[in-house]
Length: 424
Image (cartoon, rainbow, N blue to C red; front, side, top):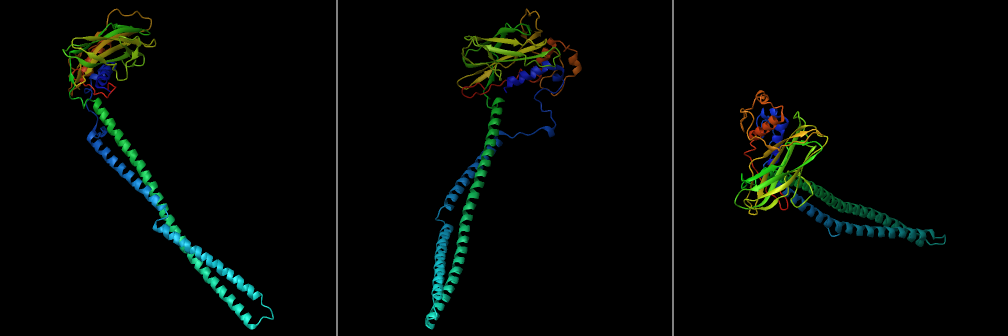
């Protein structure tokens, strides 16, 4: 939000509740208890945090890359554990084959024994039984060897698989760490960007911008009374009273209105629009209250901006004020603007009323009470405000101008440095 919008809003608040506005410490004073004031980190601290978050993220990315490479290695067949498992598999296969051969030898030896007849000699019987006994013993040994080889294979495969699972888990953890680090980095970057944007909007980077009282904005043709349900056209004349060209000039306008009580804001029922001289299309004043820039406004020249104030038919009778100002920006980086917000007061008449005959005029530049002390810590008693007759619109708007001095509206000026293609 621009300083002009902040000031206009603060002054408008005085229109709504002038006694309250001028009976407390001036706006922008830090009157909150210490326990309610939160210290915001500086931009330097946020930059440091963003750099630290980036370093953590970079380390996380490197760790994830290394973990991915470790998974690829672990999944290959050339690691020591993979080679050991392959060797164990070969041994287990050989033991299984030996076991099969031994079992087949037992079957064959048993068949020889079974083939003996009563006519077989003692030597044939002894040889057959001895062969069977040896075959059975060899089969037991082969079975033992196979069992041992299978156990060795299982152990080797488990070790290889554990290594692979461990690498995969490490990669998963690294990926999660990278994701978390990226979130932290994005948050730190976002916080820094927001702080820098706010600093820019507060004018921290516009030390070269200067007040220029010769850049004036004057409203003509705005009726002193606007009837609800109607639209009124008027002009905003922007004049470069200097002897030098201003490369871009940004007209500023802001409208605020309340009902007669001054307590109910009519912002949704009162609309401010503008149109360029070459167009019949009406544009709403944007959310920053600046219109499109005027290009190359030469010294001593002026430009009239067509304006329109529309009041909804449902709006009750009330009071309003339109603030105007102008800022400029040169291609060489110099910038400035009109130092004050000019406020034009008008009344809102109920639908069907007769339109006013006079024109709205700028409000008074000084408070309507001598007790107001701009930028001081003292407050103005509510009673002294009541004595001014703050119930009528004129007094309320006069008090608004007093509030402008109380918050330094006549002394504060900021022009925002703009990004390419914008007028921030």
